[in-house]
Length: 358
Image 1 (cartoon, rainbow, N blue to C red):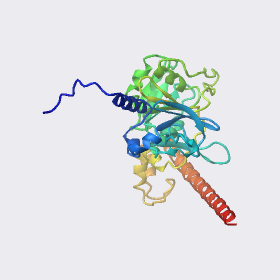
Image 2 (tube, helix red, strand yellow; image 1 turned 45 degrees about the vertical axis):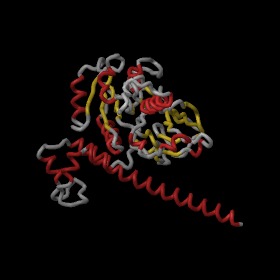
Image 3 (tube, rainbow, N blue to C red; image 1 turned 90 degrees about the vertical axis):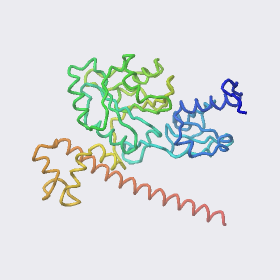
Image 4 (cartoon, helix red, strand yellow; image 1 turned 90 degrees about the horizontal axis):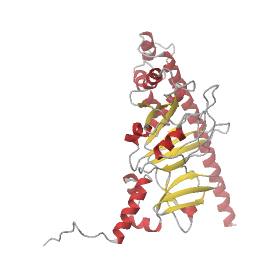
């Protein structure tokens, strides 16, 4: 005879398991990460997410876990660890489901990790003089490459004279990218982003300083915990208020990453992202007579034929060619750098091994 368990009181262990699962879900833990671990591992090494990266320390959070640990190599905000309580430096980094990165500013040409394990990237731009289609295309390509859903968010519509013009330009970038226009300070703004901010999801606000990223994060949170500043009236450019990337857990159970403004966004390793962002141009490229066609004066160039017939926009094609060339160059440079570092590390290990033998 089967027992009716519908009114059975849950045990303390069951309640604890459910609470742990709920806390982890709100931090963005899901099936992708469950598949990488064994249940026995979790007792000794609980999952923890990096919510902030400092110079020498990391802020991590998990179920009933919120502390600072020493920095680890090659990690970024959003990464998941199996936290080693005995030796935090030996904590295991779980495989990422997405990673957004760029070539770091400056002359050293290092690769800079921006964020890991995002589901959606809100690419934020103001409806003013700081609006740039070229900059939006860079962010979209970066998101596509990481297999993160890009969404263009146009802010400050209350100050714009012609909102339709900004929306039209944003929509023309790609048919695959949603465009949302809103006033970041309006409490109802969160409703426009609701479909991407479900419990267990991780979203990020990306864009230049002063476009309203932190304001939007505050609107989603329903408070003013993140500091904001006004833009300069002379050129509509913002000042850095957010100085580090930080993951905030919203009351809704969505994790939101607020980032500093990035005016310089050098692309690297984004060939697939560029193909998706400029899908029409990439499709045309396949019809060129020569595989190495530069789309300039070569005979049988399908791209030039489309320009002549008025089917594609010349400035857009020029931006595409520029980004493709930039990506190829930066990817080569970073590949050479990785090889040098790998060779250097190999030599160091060899010297150490030789010294130990003595």
